[in-house]
Amino acid sequence: MAKQQLQVGENCPDCGTPAIAGKDGGGYCKSCYIKWAKANKPQQQARKTNQPFVTPGEIKKQETDLATGKVRHYFALEAYKLAKPLDVTTAIDINKWVNYVMTGRLSNPPVDTASAFNPEDINLD
Ligand SMILES: [Zn+2]
Image (tube, rainbow, N blue to C red; front, side, top):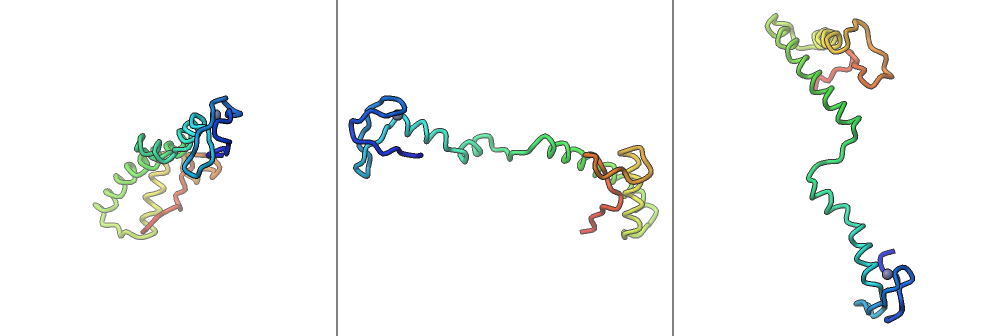
C-alpha cells in the first residue's frame, strides 16, 4: 500500500509516527511513505547499474555462442578458400567440424545438455 490513510495526528500503526496531512487532505505517515517509495524504485536502480539483468545460464550461453562463433570463423574461412558455395551443405559441414572442435564428438550431442551444439541448427539469415 502506497499511502495508508490515517487521521492527521493519529499515530501510525506500523511505526508510531504521528500522521501528517497529505495533498488530498487525508493524513499519512511520512516515514512509512518514504520507506515504501524507496523500496519501489526498480527503474532507477536499473538505470544506476546500467546493465541488463542476465542469469548465469544466459552468460554461459553467450560465452559458448561467442566461442562457437570464433571456431566457426576459421572453418568458414577455409571453406571460402576452397571456393565452397555458401549453402546448406557447406554450412552443415562447417557446423560438424565446429561441433567436433567444441565437443570432441562426431555425432550430434544429446539435446538435453546445456552445452549441446546441434550441427543441424544453422542460421542462414
Ligand atoms: Zn509509519
